[in-house]
Image (tube, rainbow, N blue to C red; front, top):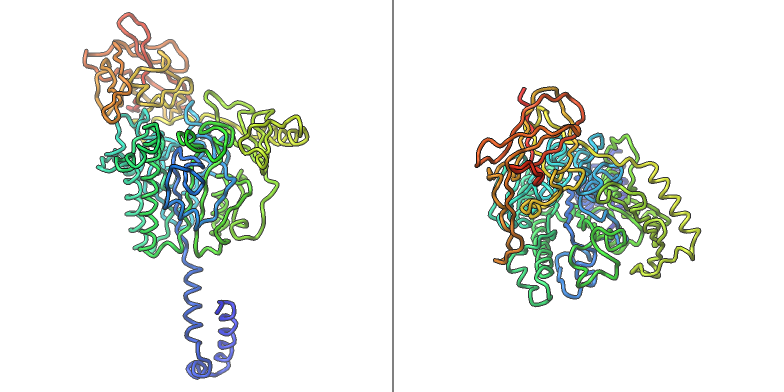
Amino acid sequence: MKIKSKMKKFIVLSILFYIGMPFPTMAEKLPGIQEISNALQTEDARITERPNIIIVLSDDQGYGDFSCHGNPVLKTPALDKLHDESIRFDNFHVAPLCTPTRGQLMTGLDAMRNGAATVITGRNILRRDVPTMPEVFSENGYATGLFGKWHLGNSYPDRPMDRGFQKCVWHKGWGLRSEIEYDNDYYETRYLDSLEIKQSGEYCTNLWFNKAMKWMDEMASKKQPFFTYIALNAPHGPFHAPAQDYNFYKEKVDNSSTASFFGMIRNIDRNMERLDSWMESSGLKENTLIVYMTDNGTARGADIYNAGMRDKKGSNYDGGHRAACFVRWPVGGLITPGTIPYATQIQDLLPTFIDLFGFEEPFRYRFDGVSLAPVLKGEKAMNDRMFVVQYGGHVKPEKYFSCVVWDSWRLVGENELYDLSEDPAQENNIAEDFPEVVNKMRAFYENWWANVEPEIIPVIIGSEKENPVFLNSDNWVDGAVNTQWKVAQAGGNPQGGTSYIQVAKDGKYKIELSRWPFHLQRNLVLPGPSTAVGGTLLRTGKAVPVEYGCFSINGSEPFVVEKNSPNAVKISYETYLKSGDITFRGWFKDKNKKNLCGAYYIKMEKLF
């Protein structure tokens, strides 16, 4: 019996009861009234109980890195099951790199508008005037938790707990081998629980899922609806997979890195199976909206299979930014699981959630994304959609370093046009054959470009909320160094790079330079630790004979300070700074005052 017919009968019974007929008599005369009442109560509970939301975002897994998408080697049974139970957005686009994708997810704004335009060059922090997805959920009564990779700022006010997450189990930088997570380990992961540094004995992906499920258990026991963001750092390189997962593929592919990459995805798949089983056993599966997404094109899988697409991570062709997106919400009143062919993007998710869940919309700006709720509910189609895919580039944002998406059309750069309905591999530039299409898409881009404001968000020092502040070579706007192996080899410009800084308060500051993370307390002159995988030495560190540290503020002549002992782990300088924006550059010299390498790690502390 449908609920609507039950409702009609219940209304009739209620009227009769209201005019004087005792309810028990009615129950005797019309069997089934208790069934109707129970059904209505169940339906009311289902409607009024707020859903939980889980987003799982993998790192560097491409659209083709699923067996359900045709990969001939990789097996992803749990993800295939989720795929079959989900609404799949098949023409779904993210940024070609990880930071801009994450910023777009959190804000509903294009990367070139929200501030987090790329991974390095100082453009990896969100604008501070833009509300974020966890802030929206929190303001609407949800508990919010992040587990894994944030990659949108490492210090106040840009950390995940500053941007709306109440529970934060996270790491800094792009991953466990980034410059800021120096000497971290995939198998015994060091992580932050809010601001407390902890050491686990767990493989990173297992850790994020374990911590997330434990927290969600706690929230469920309190009847507290939650928004959970499981942001994986796998299968991002370096490719380290648990032995059982690596061994599963080592004889199936020719390259050990590919075997590890596939092994990391196999481990993700096994964790997704655990997550699904947990939702089943906890009774949360039916009213939990889960989204599984990939954050850019594949980093490694294109060697085996790329779903017929051109190029991979970092590219403006579809292989760089077409991603998987599965959405499942069993009791959400959504359409039957199936494939949605319309052009959609990651910026659509925040407005979609606001629409689906009836949230207040506390925004002072227009989203770049649009709500997909009408599509998910089967209320309307979404044809004739145009948007821009672009991130900040390697040095600075460049005009036409882009792709314009218009249904199946792609305008790559200024003059490359492809029709993916005829040419999914983007092999034939047909711009000359369709000048009217090129002109329309180029005009759209020109208008878009004129209204974005790529900017560098400075790191804040001297705040009462965090003092001291640690900066690193990822903050450099010129020639950034963001891997631990490049630090170990003393790579980059011998004069380091420039960091953009905002001084919160006037005062005296101590500035310390080091070649190594401060927690290591490592001699400045020692060679960097070598990098090895499975007993194989991959990179050897380099020693540099540091004798002097150089401090330059706002491009001034550097203050040159001699180290205070042969075993020095840092070189310090004190100076008075006025509030406002400054630039800073720090580097090292040898005894002959020859430039050696940048100060990859900088500590800035307000003294008084």
